[in-house]
Length: 568
Image (cartoon, rainbow, N blue to C red; front, side, top):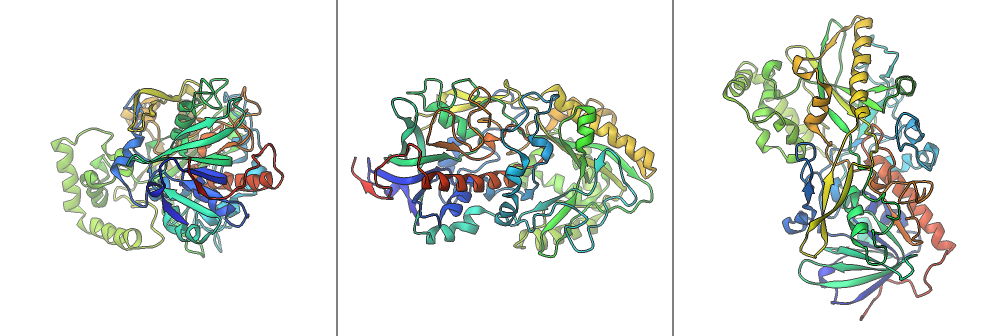
């Protein structure tokens, strides 16, 4: 059932066997996976079914360098479904190398092996509605996918790796009715958890304090708690719950909120191809899923050159530069202020449009009106109106020039962090302050990866890959887009012990027997991959662990486990 926390009688105590805090991809996955377990699950979500400005404003915080990191209330949604209500749907599994302790990447290595997560990927792929778990272009569809660049077979890169796209699936919209029908699941909307109260000895969580924006408050007691509130809010809640654990829950070694990663990403270079046949669009698998090839740095190349994980995507020229002479691209640029923040940011990063640039974009529209019209028609039919949406802008540029999108792993730096600010929200909870940083290795990964690809292109004879003069400073190109989007990773990392992590390999907070964390906050490294698919896979794994743990209790409470309400 789904209810409203604002209707809970003040000072009521709710009890359950498992309390999940956060109704995004991880939280909803946990609830779905546990709905037939026989366990009573209470899922608490701060938002409602729609975006609500006062609730969204609870995400507001401070940023150390606004040129490197977006405002903290952007790229994420404080509502049922979380950021799956706005995501683009790109699904990619992590690679085996991502789990290894790599000597050239400080703080790398997971306490669990790739195979431990890989067994959950097929079910996760199904849940996010991204088709079959097959990420090889040679087998992802009957007869294989079209080659990206005919005859191009680089040595340092794998061009048969693909990304798949969800609908994109809004977890709240897609799975709401399943949760409503589940007798053992109770979802409470508008429920803001403001504190996790630890027992006096600090070894377990006794209850969660919940408040509503209209002044309501109540408590939740549970055998097991799971915090699934995202990479920024998870450390905030644990750091703010500091009356028993003075430095915050799980922060005995000052790791909570540190090693904050996103991805380094942007658009770079000019690729001029000769007569090679090029396909930089999407293929569709038999089930209708959109799939696309990418140029992935091989594990052997990462080892040989001491680099992080990195992929390139063949892309149209950078939209703000009217030299592409493409009407559709200029139309997108001129309409940038009508595009959502999440997707419009990369169109505004070059500053205001001067008159000369604006006139050149208008000129592109005048000389290529049919290209713009065809693009708009396709977008309405296959993106706006379609149930499975066309993933992104794909336009063959008139000038036969392409650029490269890069998407790279970020080194987990302890000084890149999320911590508490002096300012507070309407509940009196400290807001967050973000100090996102990148490393020289992040820059070298992009620079060396580009140089390797440029050499492969030249040796193959298919064309040339070059940098424009203003792109020669790769670090400036990395800084241009800064911390990429909504990929908030690593702020409550897994480790072998509390000296190396906030949680163990099962997501349990070290030293707190009944508190677990879910989501990308617990990833020790970021990979090159978007995090959602792995978030869902790990949530499914955690659900199985919680069910097993409840079947064989370890220091759990003995009170009746029911979703009942009682007076305080």
